[in-house]
Length: 434
Image 1 (spheres, rainbow, N blue to C red):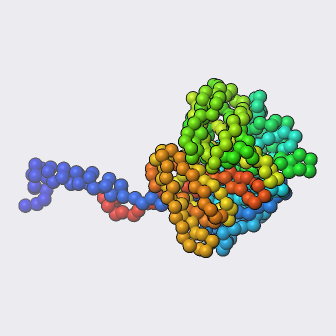
Image 2: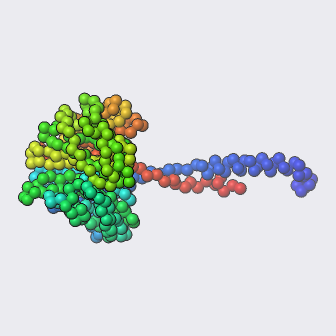
Image 3: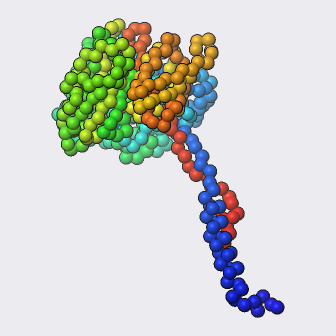
């Protein structure tokens, strides 16, 4: 009997079964894929204002290059500490965080975590007053020209935006006093219209021949309703602090502050319901808080808000430091370059590990836990430290660093090099079945 003679009634079940098999197996084959992860490159600021700098790397053998417009060739560095230069530094992607330390004169010390950058960067801090020597550095690490807009705010009004073009593989430095002339209370919003741009703000102040200190202002991505600042210096016998706020929206914000310390949590007098006018930079002094160790602040608001803390010290030659809103910690490695620091963390039922090597090269490890906050005050200066959260709940961390001359710097614990994932195609002959 020929195939054509087979009754159609017998062929129908066979064809239906084949169709079901194809419909079932082919999508399943297509669902198989592989996700590859990579770390984006970061950019470190150049030595600003005539200062000297060094950059600490979390690992050796990292490819880097200077951003100077002359070359885009990466070179392997077989060291953990790089001498800084006037040109910014481009560091290839890795699971750690690089830190730029800068000294201009006197006892001042400024530290900045090298950054990926992004389309929006907010800087809550700085001054354009008579003592200001502050500099905004805008870096284009890409290979084509970039355009950016600067939206300045002062204590009275939102000012007109300033448009700039940054040439490929170069940076541009702008005096803060030329952006907001005469304004003591300043905030900036840097918007990138095109290109790969990273910005840094160094707040540096002098009075005649006297250096008043310097500090980097850490960038923030967006205003939020709940945020945290951690690792603040608690000795008011030698320091005073203030809060700086900006509500970029169109409604006045009702703000509440909670202080987290080793002795518990409390709200300072006058900060249980603080009204902050919108689109004005508002400075509010913090009351004197004589605390035995570092502390942190929770800021809650009924409107999205940006906030920062400024601490001024009087011991040594005097210095100041800006601390800004934090993002949650993920596992990362950072090189503190032999600087002594004290750490503070905020979170619910927080738990994380810190691993490092002591001066003799021996591996050390400590478990840091707390119900709502925890502090860590290592006895010795630290080099490379790895922080590993042990809970899925968010943990916010920061540190204050002190040098022998009394220079103060706040360092946010940020894993800026988060993994970016992409699907890799897989050749599968089953996907060609019909």
